[in-house]
Length: 266
Image (tube, rainbow, N blue to C red; front, side, top):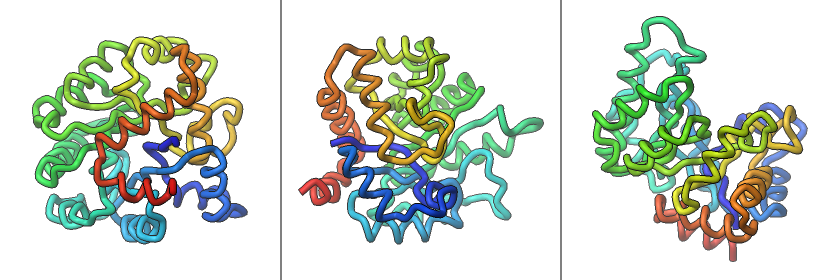
């Protein structure tokens, strides 16, 4: 069984109005994708994510506000913690720093990032980290805020081997998306070859970043199989070995998901 460690199911459905949730989940099952972590990008969408997760035991969610989001009110710790108490919420995020889409004075982004880390430590739940063109600062903030106490996932990892090692040292897993399959991703593929499989996850970040052979089209959780197959080829392993280990890595990080995922697999 595979687990898509990062997807945005409401956005997948929004961008593909002809597709329904039933078809989406059936395609995932056909591809041996037995579980998904549906990641929040704002607080407005969290009630809908909770409803989705409660209806489908193999879908768990996070709570947080994306570093590029501009909500009317900044998320405060009390609100984040209130959502985090729900057993269907297994992580805080996605959160982090993004110097690609957001420019200028970014103190507000750093403050939001630190607030999410403090929430995760208070809730004792792992973090989902978004990092784009801010790798040094992301590692610095994680270290300063003692994020290694709870660890988490470096989502959609695209940085170099040195940053990967620093993230591993801070108790984070490295998650590869469809970018790993791109022809121009040779440096990232070399990073994947070097890293130990017991610290890796696979994801889609759907509806974005569809892997080969679907690049340029809409993405969906079923396509995480392509990422896992490509990772297996890079490492000279079988697909089954990669599926088994990355699923174990996810379950070890989020042990409360074992029951729901076991029910889905039964």
